[in-house]
Image (tube, rainbow, N blue to C red; front, side):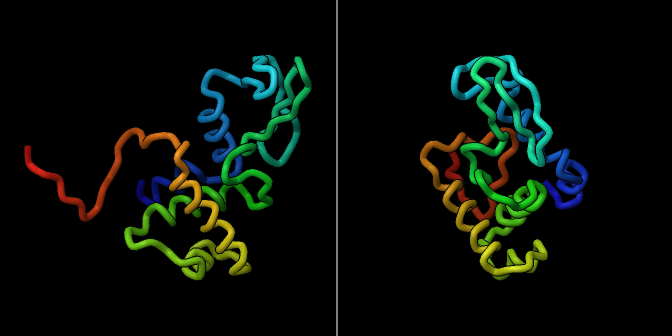
Length: 140
């Protein structure tokens, strides 16, 4: 995805939150505790739902690399885009500059979480169009 397409699709926090809700619960909210499908959205910075049955509150970022992070969703999304767009990898210092972050530690934290997520054996397989640079495929 080009940077322009990224900016158009994920222009603000609300767009990022909507995307996460649609990806996590494509058929509507499902409680992780009791599997109930009735719930309501709470007024929170991040999309958070409360189950009508067991009253468990679940943030859309719970159990993800963004879990318990105070960084805006837009920063996370932009970091993912920047990290996955660099074919040679990126350093925390470069990420800090690209995102305009105030501290190296924040950039390092983001990068470590993203790197860990990219090698998670339980991760989902790639979907849709996948681009591969500098790869050789044998002719069959």
